[in-house]
Each structure stands twice: as structure tokens, then as C-alpha cells.
Length: 146
Ligand code: DQA
Image: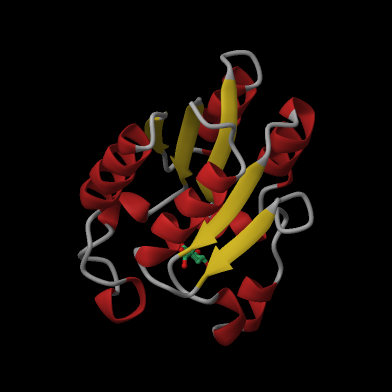
């Protein structure tokens, strides 16, 4: 099946950005690791990072018609702001898992609100780059065997 990994704003800086919070693993390393794991399980994973809300909304809309079976999404700061991205996910009704490197509940109060959690199959947060691996495992367990 086709899986889509989406990363929101500033995650292009992973590895350098506030490493005490987000770790030293780069986005390219995360993307390569997940693509290899999906491939080994007989699936295909494509990834996209954007700092622009419109690009993410357009990609989610496209996922509604391109056979994407599962989305892994770290909305980053859009977690706490984007009704538009939420509405796109509700519109296409592709199941998704919300992923965060940090645990937003252990940080500033404004990070406790998510526009995505109630629509998500589940939420994985607080395990650094491993959060993405756990999310992929959860998605693979919910897909039919290839
Ligand atoms: C984040 C948490 C968000 O609050 C923050 O805006 C991010 C990254 C995380 O992965 O921990 O950019 O989504």
C-alpha cells in the first residue's frame, strides 16, 4: 500500500533546531529510515515537508485520490493553529496518525491544543525520532499484508 509521511513547518531544520528538545536526527535520516522500513514490509512510503500550509493542504487533498492508504503527520506548529489542514484530513478521510518528537503536553500551555488529535487514529508523542518509527509500526499493523 501507499503511505504518506507529512512534516509541517521548521521540521526541515531537524538535527540543528533546539536539539535538546528535538534531537540530533535530521529529517533526511527520518525519511530514509521510514522509507526503508516501509519497503521492507512490502509497502511504499513517500515523504514531504513544507513550511507552507497550502502545500500541505494540497498534498492531503491529492492523497484522497491517489490511493494513499495511510498518512503519518507531524503538523508541527500547525498542530495548534490549522483548521485548514484539519478540514483537509476530514475531507479525504484517509486514516492518519499524529506524530510529535516532543511531548507537547509537557511544554508550553499553547501546545496542549491539537486540531488533529480527535480525528487521528492515534497520537504518538515524546519519543524523539523514534516517534516516527512507532507511528509507522502502528500504521503497518493496520494495513492488509502486501
Ligand atoms: C512538534 C511540537 C510542536 O508544538 C512544535 O510546534 C513543532 C514540533 C514536535 O514534533 O514535537 O514544530 O510537532
